[in-house]
Amino acid sequence: MTEAEFFEQVLGIKEIRVDRVDWQEQSLHIYCGSIFEEALCPHCLNKRHVVHQTYERQFRDLPITGKEVYLHLSQRQFYCPDCDRHFNERFSFVDLKRTMTRRYERYVYECCKASTIQKISAQENLVWHTVNEICQRGARQEIDERPLSKVRVVGMDEFAIKKGHRDYATVIVDL
Image (tube, rainbow, N blue to C red):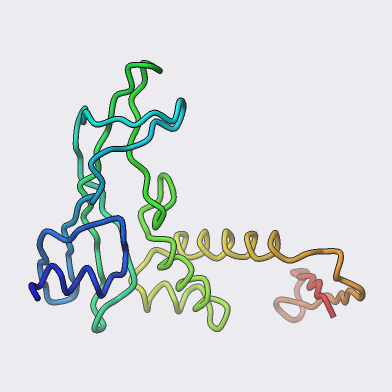
């Protein structure tokens, strides 16, 4: 088994093939591309084969052996003559306009539930605002997935953030 095949199995992402792996002291850079020969136009849903251009996108993924993992994906842009539009191929493991895989964002969110944003920011070597945004998005998604029809009793309390000051916060809980 080659190193590339090994990392394809470790990553478990079916849509990509690993071309090469670059080990660095603090991080692991995995260079990869799509396994698909064609892409569906998101507007007319016709298959397109002709690549207009290729560019590299970098995504942060779950750590491996304590090292930060960065996926360098060679992403393709296609042209659809029926729609007269360009479109980028899409992948299920990352959301549009994101720089982290879905599973890594989920991991950061789960860590935030058990700790503070500041601590996770330092632990994962991420900017505080990025971790906060991931936390907010994860909380919104979790709330949207929870059916409100099952809520029977709501608890509400307020507390002083800093004693002796006028800074208060309110907590609302599904009891």
